[in-house]
Image (cartoon, rainbow, N blue to C red; front, side, top):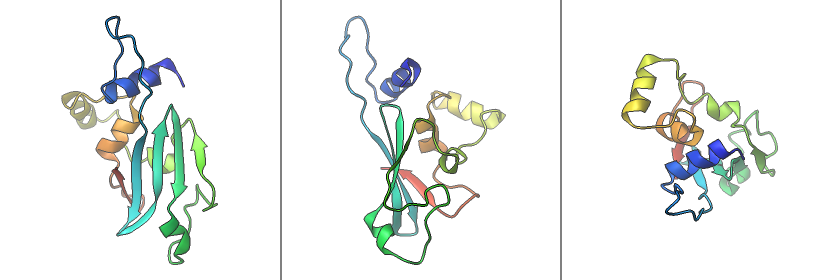
Length: 134
């Protein structure tokens, strides 16, 4: 994990370090739940700069909805340091003037993918699923 990501996560979680308080706290896990109606599809998490996605037991046992294209194996826990396009497309382009104004107004770091996903990622026109921070 890069120092910039660590600083961003600590800032977002209110755990900045300083000369007066040099103790570094381990960043908490940030979690999102992906749902379709009342069905929990799975959980997206971020901890120590690693994104993780896993299907819920509830989703694994149902047969109406197929697995997501980017995550074909329902038994696997997927991990990456770069947020998957399925999730990253849920945030609007930072080139949009209105989006930049909003993140400045709300004091959101434009490099903080988790915070941007929390602010903008609940719904998308690309698919019918909802993503909410838990």
